[in-house]
Image 1: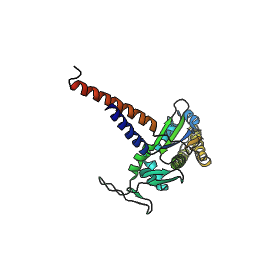
Image 2 (image 1 turned 90 degrees about the vertical axis):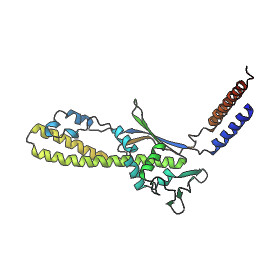
Image 3 (image 1 turned 135 degrees about the vertical axis):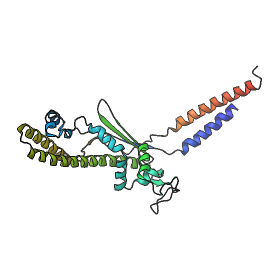
Image 4 (image 1 turned 180 degrees about the vertical axis):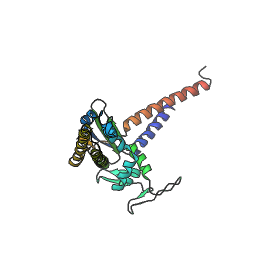
Length: 280
């Protein structure tokens, strides 16, 4: 009985392990570009409140935290979906052909020939997945962390297609830089408009000098946004196409399943032995 159960569990675990899809992880190491005007703005912290513009100093803002939260946000996923045809690869991937490097999709969810969604509708869902569903799938394949000591940001994307993992991670970094740049340019433009109005109103020389330095800081922000493509995230280690799977570890699945089956069979035999009265 012990041999039979252990062998049966081992065979089942082998078939199960072989049925699992390979997943590949592309990774990139980045560093957040620090705001070059942080020191100059902090020096003005005692003066700018008198001009009514204390909220523009941006003290305490962590640029790395900001861009990480942008990348993890639902609005960012909505932006990605509006600019790229990536929804099928997020929701309906089925298999990856290593020879042709082609990703195939689940025919019960997405018809690749007609480029249409054919999944069954449940719980008032639409036939085409929403960006909220895409966001949940997105978070399952995304891992983003920041080292507390070096401040380096590590981003990983896991997918059954190593090519898509690399291309998608490249897209994430590119669009995160683009969105953050657009946000900062918009804020800077509004800040410049406000500062120029305040400059024309105040008669105090000290306040005028403070506002002029703030205007210079905002102009520096716009210059940085215009010059650097890697505006928020500087790539230290670019995304790559992985050549080895990250999971599953089939050997460990088989080994632990076999050990569990063997342990279960031994316990079962001992229970039967003692409950039958032979162990007395």
